[in-house]
Image (cartoon, rainbow, N blue to C red; front, side, top):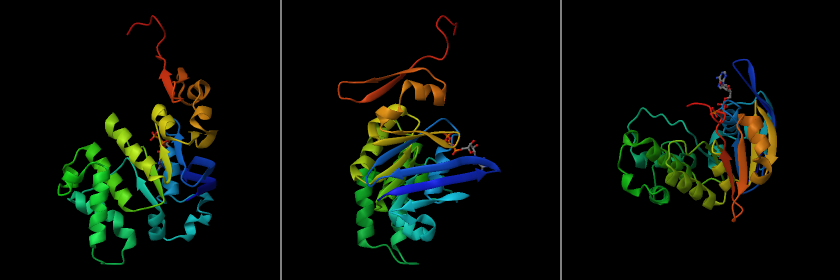
Length: 260
Ligand SMILES: Nc1ncnc2c1ncn2[C@@H]1O[C@H](COP(=O)(O)OP(=O)(O)OP(=O)(O)O)[C@@H](O)[C@H]1O
């Protein structure tokens, strides 16, 4: 499934936050969005997953304008894992993951055996089967994030939007979540702060700065010493290991000899 944005502009509180974003994410591509705090990554993703409405421009899913689709249709095509998951109700893990099936249901339609089987399968994929009867709000931040991924998996969509999905996770689960999503072989757009992780998973990367795309290409093309200096005002060395995997080493910001 392709996702494209054409000249997407978003103003928030009277300030232009996105200033005309053009993107083209091909079928089954894993695409990263990088850039400094406040550059507009979340705003862009929220616009793609319809929490925000663009003030200008259009978003297309497989050439169909998003605004022509119902929210239910969109939810059958696109699942979201974001970094903010606040729930005030005491849902169990099973109930949380079952919510992923709601786009496929009519009003008041009961859950089926297929729904329960999908919940079991998705919890197993994120290594959380034994938590099925726990109350969601009693889980740690990282455990909650894995349940939110299971809910997204239960939506059985052809694309997934990830807004810094590994925020709460230790390195094992960061890699597990991204491996799980990568193995789905679906279209993915994900915001990243960690450039090394972005380089490991992304086919293509868009770099944003102050609401504009300043670089686009493969991780090797985009993640360079110059770009890191321009975006983050940090000096770095960008190397490639013998497997061709790119890795960034950041240099201390204090000058040599400076006292701690
Ligand atoms: N409702 C709002 N009203 C005014 N400004 C807003 C609003 N929501 C977000 N912004 C501003 O829009 C800018 C972009 O925010 P956004 O969350 O998209 O950045 P980001 O790149 O995801 O940042 P981070 O890496 O810190 O998560 C920020 O300067 C933020 O303060």
